[in-house]
Length: 142
Image (cartoon, rainbow, N blue to C red; front, side):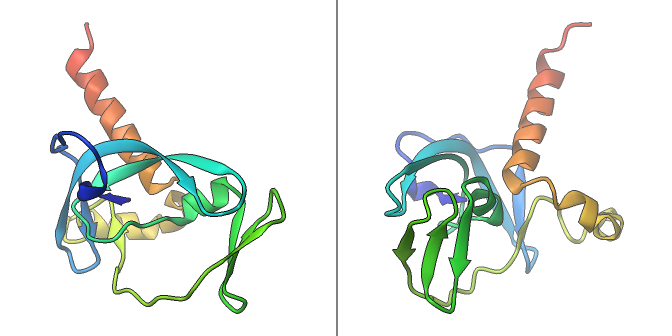
């Protein structure tokens, strides 16, 4: 997730929203393709959700896609593809959890029951699927 001030140009508020762990609404502004250089001799291109957050968040979906491993004990980021490592530092941030659904919704309890089944889909995949569905519904011809 990228803070909206990281992007260039005008942003259009999306109708899709995220929710923080404390149920605070987080507005989204689409996605942006970003080239990420973590000092591992390769650039990683990724579509990030642009949102009204203060801190950029690299999720487990990004780490898994690029074969990256976080070694907290040695404070390094390991690249499983190139076998290189980049130095890191442990920083404590109060980011909390971000979800694609309102935890106070009547469906929240039902979604929690199927949490394991839902884990395979990344936050970005959820967001893009909703965007595509919305687009298809607006422009379908029957």
